[in-house]
Image (cartoon, rainbow, N blue to C red; front, side):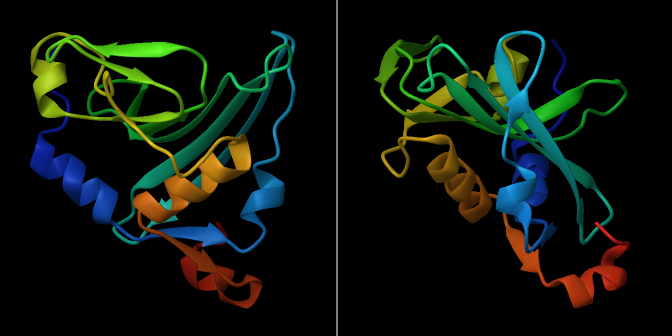
Length: 161
Protein backbone atom coordinates (compact mmCIF):
# COMPACT_ATOMS: atom_id res chain seq x y z
CA UNK A 1 0.00 0.00 0.00
CA UNK A 2 1.55 3.34 -0.99
CA UNK A 3 1.78 6.24 1.43
CA UNK A 4 -1.19 8.52 0.68
CA UNK A 5 -0.39 11.13 3.31
CA UNK A 6 2.82 11.70 5.25
CA UNK A 7 2.75 12.31 9.00
CA UNK A 8 3.20 16.04 8.34
CA UNK A 9 0.25 16.06 5.92
CA UNK A 10 -1.88 14.08 8.39
CA UNK A 11 -1.02 16.61 11.11
CA UNK A 12 -2.03 19.44 8.77
CA UNK A 13 -5.36 17.76 7.95
CA UNK A 14 -6.00 17.20 11.65
CA UNK A 15 -5.20 20.84 12.47
CA UNK A 16 -7.36 22.28 9.67
CA UNK A 17 -10.41 23.90 11.31
CA UNK A 18 -13.55 22.03 10.25
CA UNK A 19 -16.91 23.81 10.23
CA UNK A 20 -19.43 21.75 12.18
CA UNK A 21 -23.14 22.70 12.32
CA UNK A 22 -24.47 23.43 15.80
CA UNK A 23 -26.96 20.53 15.48
CA UNK A 24 -24.24 17.97 14.68
CA UNK A 25 -25.21 15.59 17.52
CA UNK A 26 -28.73 15.13 16.12
CA UNK A 27 -27.38 14.88 12.56
CA UNK A 28 -25.01 12.09 13.65
CA UNK A 29 -27.65 9.92 15.37
CA UNK A 30 -27.23 6.61 13.54
CA UNK A 31 -30.14 5.05 11.68
CA UNK A 32 -30.81 1.40 10.90
CA UNK A 33 -29.37 0.04 7.68
CA UNK A 34 -29.88 -3.24 5.85
CA UNK A 35 -26.76 -4.82 7.36
CA UNK A 36 -28.03 -4.97 10.96
CA UNK A 37 -25.97 -1.92 11.75
CA UNK A 38 -26.83 1.67 12.60
CA UNK A 39 -25.05 4.24 10.43
CA UNK A 40 -24.93 7.95 9.72
CA UNK A 41 -22.57 10.32 7.91
CA UNK A 42 -22.05 14.06 8.03
CA UNK A 43 -19.89 15.96 5.53
CA UNK A 44 -18.20 19.11 6.81
CA UNK A 45 -15.96 21.63 5.11
CA UNK A 46 -12.51 22.52 6.36
CA UNK A 47 -11.23 26.10 6.26
CA UNK A 48 -8.73 25.15 3.54
CA UNK A 49 -11.49 23.64 1.38
CA UNK A 50 -11.02 19.97 2.28
CA UNK A 51 -14.25 18.03 2.67
CA UNK A 52 -14.17 15.84 5.75
CA UNK A 53 -16.73 13.19 6.68
CA UNK A 54 -17.74 11.99 10.13
CA UNK A 55 -19.04 8.42 9.91
CA UNK A 56 -20.87 6.75 12.80
CA UNK A 57 -21.49 2.99 12.83
CA UNK A 58 -22.95 0.87 15.62
CA UNK A 59 -23.96 -2.79 15.83
CA UNK A 60 -27.64 -3.40 16.59
CA UNK A 61 -26.80 -6.71 18.31
CA UNK A 62 -23.95 -5.29 20.44
CA UNK A 63 -24.04 -1.52 21.12
CA UNK A 64 -20.42 -1.66 22.40
CA UNK A 65 -19.32 -2.44 18.85
CA UNK A 66 -19.18 1.02 17.34
CA UNK A 67 -16.91 3.26 15.34
CA UNK A 68 -16.80 7.00 14.92
CA UNK A 69 -14.58 7.81 11.95
CA UNK A 70 -13.12 11.08 10.70
CA UNK A 71 -12.19 10.74 7.03
CA UNK A 72 -11.09 12.85 4.09
CA UNK A 73 -10.49 12.15 0.40
CA UNK A 74 -7.62 9.79 -0.40
CA UNK A 75 -5.26 11.23 -3.03
CA UNK A 76 -5.66 9.49 -6.37
CA UNK A 77 -8.43 7.18 -5.11
CA UNK A 78 -12.19 7.14 -4.86
CA UNK A 79 -11.95 5.78 -1.29
CA UNK A 80 -11.64 7.76 1.90
CA UNK A 81 -8.54 8.20 4.00
CA UNK A 82 -9.33 7.45 7.66
CA UNK A 83 -7.59 10.04 9.83
CA UNK A 84 -9.06 8.76 13.11
CA UNK A 85 -11.35 5.93 14.15
CA UNK A 86 -12.81 5.76 17.67
CA UNK A 87 -13.94 2.23 18.60
CA UNK A 88 -15.94 0.91 21.50
CA UNK A 89 -14.94 -1.93 23.79
CA UNK A 90 -15.35 -4.82 21.37
CA UNK A 91 -12.33 -6.91 22.24
CA UNK A 92 -8.65 -6.44 21.69
CA UNK A 93 -6.61 -4.78 18.97
CA UNK A 94 -2.96 -5.63 18.26
CA UNK A 95 -0.60 -3.01 16.87
CA UNK A 96 1.31 -5.25 14.48
CA UNK A 97 4.49 -3.22 14.17
CA UNK A 98 4.95 -2.80 17.92
CA UNK A 99 3.31 -6.06 19.00
CA UNK A 100 1.33 -4.20 21.67
CA UNK A 101 -2.24 -5.11 22.58
CA UNK A 102 -4.93 -2.51 23.20
CA UNK A 103 -8.09 -3.44 25.11
CA UNK A 104 -11.25 -1.48 25.81
CA UNK A 105 -12.33 1.72 24.07
CA UNK A 106 -9.58 2.95 21.77
CA UNK A 107 -8.75 5.33 18.95
CA UNK A 108 -7.01 4.41 15.71
CA UNK A 109 -4.59 6.99 14.35
CA UNK A 110 -3.46 7.34 10.75
CA UNK A 111 0.32 7.10 10.43
CA UNK A 112 2.80 7.20 7.58
CA UNK A 113 4.67 4.30 9.17
CA UNK A 114 1.74 1.88 8.99
CA UNK A 115 0.94 2.91 5.41
CA UNK A 116 4.57 2.32 4.37
CA UNK A 117 4.46 -1.15 5.98
CA UNK A 118 1.42 -2.07 3.87
CA UNK A 119 -1.24 -1.77 6.57
CA UNK A 120 -4.38 0.36 6.62
CA UNK A 121 -3.52 3.98 7.37
CA UNK A 122 -5.24 3.85 10.78
CA UNK A 123 -3.99 0.41 11.85
CA UNK A 124 -2.18 1.85 14.90
CA UNK A 125 -4.38 2.24 18.01
CA UNK A 126 -4.17 3.63 21.55
CA UNK A 127 -6.43 3.14 24.56
CA UNK A 128 -8.84 6.04 25.04
CA UNK A 129 -10.73 6.28 28.34
CA UNK A 130 -12.66 9.44 27.41
CA UNK A 131 -15.60 7.50 26.02
CA UNK A 132 -17.65 4.33 26.55
CA UNK A 133 -20.48 5.02 24.10
CA UNK A 134 -21.09 6.53 20.67
CA UNK A 135 -21.92 10.01 21.99
CA UNK A 136 -18.67 10.10 23.97
CA UNK A 137 -16.69 8.88 20.96
CA UNK A 138 -18.23 11.64 18.83
CA UNK A 139 -17.20 14.19 21.48
CA UNK A 140 -13.63 12.78 21.52
CA UNK A 141 -13.42 13.00 17.72
CA UNK A 142 -14.71 16.59 17.76
CA UNK A 143 -12.14 17.54 20.42
CA UNK A 144 -9.20 15.84 18.67
CA UNK A 145 -9.83 16.80 15.07
CA UNK A 146 -10.15 20.62 15.15
CA UNK A 147 -13.89 20.80 14.62
CA UNK A 148 -15.43 24.21 15.23
CA UNK A 149 -19.15 24.52 15.89
CA UNK A 150 -20.80 27.05 13.61
CA UNK A 151 -24.08 28.66 14.61
CA UNK A 152 -26.93 28.52 12.01
CA UNK A 153 -26.64 32.24 11.17
CA UNK A 154 -22.96 31.71 10.27
CA UNK A 155 -23.49 28.74 7.93
CA UNK A 156 -23.83 30.90 4.80
CA UNK A 157 -20.27 32.06 5.40
CA UNK A 158 -19.08 28.45 4.99
CA UNK A 159 -21.07 27.30 2.01
CA UNK A 160 -24.05 26.01 3.98
CA UNK A 161 -22.30 22.95 5.48
